[in-house]
Image 1: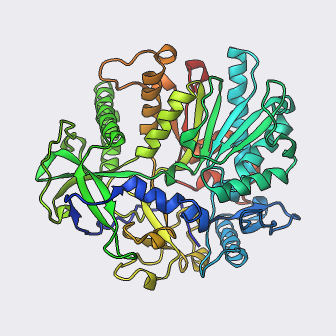
Image 2 (image 1 turned 180 degrees about the horizontal axis):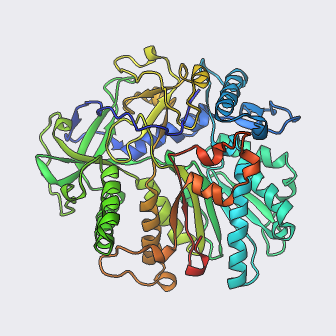
Image 3 (image 1 turned 135 degrees about the horizontal axis):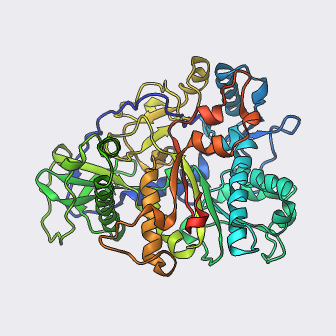
Length: 549
């Protein structure tokens, strides 16, 4: 069972697994492409064959839905009755029981069903109702400014389809006239998840909307089996939402060596000498356009922080410096030299164990950058609501935005790799002993993603998200691609928060504002939807000052 648990204590960083990095020209792919194959390869990737999201259903409904035409149904359990739970301990024990039942009901090939849950499922329907409440409130503000227009919602990475149904249920009940013309679309690259979403919608009260031709007076739901990077352009007002999708967007890794401190190197991965051999990493001068663009924006963002700090008092700047240190592996902002993007020429580092000479490294969210760029180009008048992990324990290294690699594989399936001890903190799953007895023996965190393809495809690889950077990036890209709406790029292009009127919120702050306390509050007053999930954040953006969340 794969547990993505909420951070309740400081992360337990372990050193990067020391593997030889070669600059010798050889076959290989960028790290993001290598990880994409492991996670999303058609018919073979983790999300095609192994990932199973626990689904909950109301009391009295069938707990084992029929398999869909193209794959298995997700394991299911009865929704939690939060008002009948005494408090935090009983809540955590109830989640543990859901996991125990899910392992037994998972119709999955192999010895170890990889089952994990999301807050969308655990807190259904309350989670979706909160997002629906936010969407309605923002839509109402826009009606007063822009006149009548349909509510348009696009979801990226829809899981089992639960969030879609809960939002549609809420809007149908609370705003029937809005529901009548609402346009909802969902993009998912996984064929299995896409089939689950179609089956869920077809079996719901919203089935008449499925594949209905969109029109100004007719609501519709369109389910697209393709990547979010291929989202259709639209000039209309609307919203783009995602819940726990950003973390599975593959990253690149960039390093700087003490031997060439001004030259960034991008990491490629090459196969081992045998079909099941261990892959190895190659360090090559940074040349990929998205890596270069990320590094350029990274430097602009650092200048933006410096400019902002110049206008703040000493106490606020101290907090900014503390935050910068947290996302740069503890290095002070002034000590992290900006990378040089001058032509590299042919000067490669010597073939050696370069890792021992690394001065600084980071994981670059290049696929997230591609997504934000596509949205800024194709949906300039649509606001974003993204939620995901903001921090993760048990990452493969202490480098900024380093991933967590988890699997249910037995230790003897990873010869030569020392696994972490059993997970004892909670990472989306409760952190009490009763719960861990159901989880710890199943979930293991690995020290590396450099695994043979057949083993990598059985691993969940996920990354934290820097939400403050996303706020800045959204403003920056909207100005770049649509200066007629947001004003021209100025000076260094550092942008400003006002350009996109976005902000980053904690999980608790969002649900305090838009949640239903009576729905998820236990008898003691503990509300896990508000009081838990300390390592989850929200990105909320508007497009004009009047539309700011």
